[in-house]
Length: 167
View 1 (cartoon, rainbow, N blue to C red):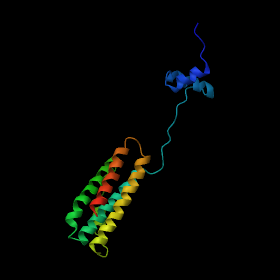
View 2 (tube, rainbow, N blue to C red):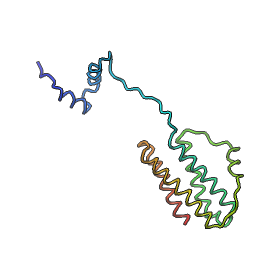
View 3 (cartoon, rainbow, N blue to C red):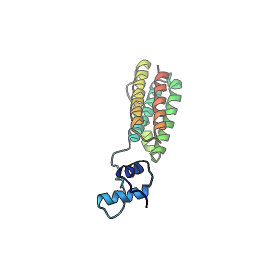
View 4 (spheres, rainbow, N blue to C red):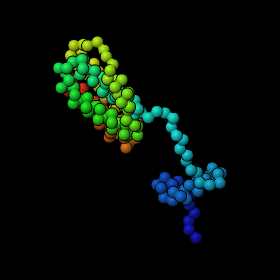
C-alpha cells in the first residue's frame, strides 16, 4: 500500500503540471461539478488595438501624399518614407485579415486638399504625426501578444527612424 497523498503533494503536483488530467478531476471534485472544469473563452468585443495603428498609418500615407503634392521639392525625400509606410499598411491589413481598401476610398483620400505651407512647417507636421504613430505603436507593443510584439515593435522603430529622417 502506498503512502497517502498529502494536500501539499497534490498542490505541488498540480502546480508543476504532473498529473494535469488527474488534477482536473480533483478540481472538479472540489467544486462539486460532475466533470472536469473546462475554462470557456468568451469572445472579446473590444476592437483589435492594431486597428488604431492601421488607421494612423493610413492617415500618415495620405499626409505624405498631400505633402508631396504641395511641396514638389520635398517629394523625392518623402517618397521612400511614404512607400515604407504604405508597406506597413499592407502588413497591418494582412495581420488583421482585412481586405485591401477599395480604389474609391483610396482616390477620395488623395483628392483632399489643404492650404500649402512652407517646407519646414510641412516637415514638422509630418514629424508630429510620425512621432504620434511611434508612440501609439510602442504602447500597443507593450500590451499585445507575444506573437505580435516583434511586428508592432518594428512599426514603432520604423516610425522613430522616419522621425529622424524628417529632421
